[in-house]
Length: 62
Image 1: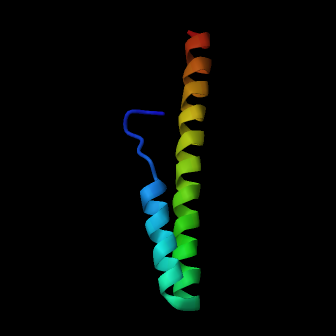
Image 2 (image 1 turned 45 degrees about the vertical axis):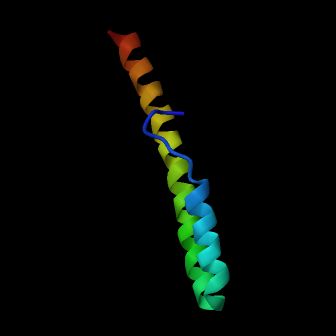
């Protein structure tokens, strides 16, 4: 993990709590927000991996 990373578990639990408390429409909304947060964390990891790969390619060409 990076130094700027943090555990999303608290936020994900809170979003799940909102989803459970707000009926069908609220559940759909908060579940989508939760999914977006999970996707954003995955994308952040993928971007970091791609940056490392790009830097490795650049350093090999110098």
